Image 1 (cartoon, helix red, strand yellow):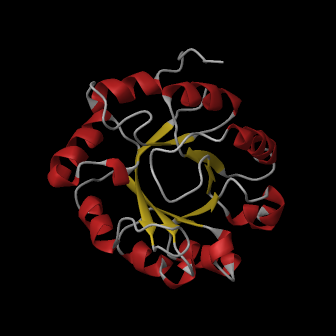
Image 2 (image 1 turned 30 degrees about the vertical axis):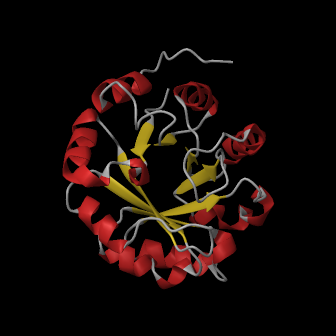
Amino acid sequence: MTKKLLCPSMMCADFSNLQKEIEELDRAGSDIFHIDIMDGEFVPSFGMGLQDFKEIRNKTQKLVDVHLMIMNPGNYVELFADSGADIIYIHPEADKHPARTLDKIRKKGKKTGVAINPGTAISTIKELLPLVDYLMVMTVNPGFSGQTYLDYVDDKIIELVQLKKKYPFEIMVDGAISPEKIAKLSKIGVRGFVLGTSALFGKKEDYAKIIKHLKQEDMEEVR
């Protein structure tokens, strides 16, 4: 089984003690720090900003991704690349020229990411797949934490697993990702999991214990 990539969603972290949060998540074995940028237009809420991104980037040597839930992401990918993002996700619906934007990301030496909403058909992004390093399936409607996992998205994930045989992208999932969902989805071909309040934050156990458990390959699949 391929090693899971566990990605704490820093939107859920305790910003009153951010240094400690990052250090504990880092030591616990997090693979990628996941940062959501929202503009209040593409999604109906505001999220983290460039200064938040820089603060986290400066405090870890781990990979840091940025999920641009914003209109016209092509105007900003170079800014985030220059600020240290390792992976940059865009939503094609928000970009008039997504292929050009992905090319900008690659020319900066960064990994390209495409995020697709629950209502986005695979057919609308299929032409972009040769340009994609990480494809992140939103399993909730983007913009808010604490939502319920949308089971109908599983069919889209299964279809993408088949397409992965042709295109070299990694499949990631984001939204209400519980330990049970990680166990189930990892067995069908999902590589990466964005961790929020369903699996990581706000629990009694410390981060190290939770992440160690989530990385176990013999986690029982909950049906």
